[in-house]
Image (cartoon, rainbow, N blue to C red; front, side):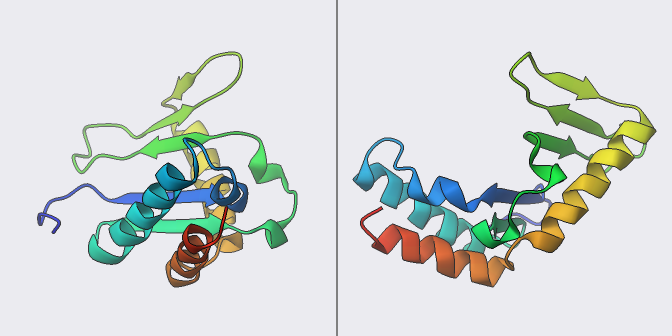
Length: 127
């Protein structure tokens, strides 16, 4: 069970990862089951899937993480992963761009409930 002050985690990943059995089928099935369990039992965790039906769009140009802190004195940071290296962005303008990008992805993603159903279905399939 989550503690009252647990960090909030919101993850959105592409549907393709459900069908790429990294570590073999047994390992993948356990990982998918763990995702469903985390999403259902931890109030601070939100897991969503960006379905194939979202099609190609500009927001698929790389992985990024936005780190936000409860203390206003600690500035938010966007961590952007790339093939040429990773970058930490701290300017308010860059953070706003990545927040906007994230919101567009959220709108295209399945709901947490729909995502859990799709993840569970992939775990039961032969991958």
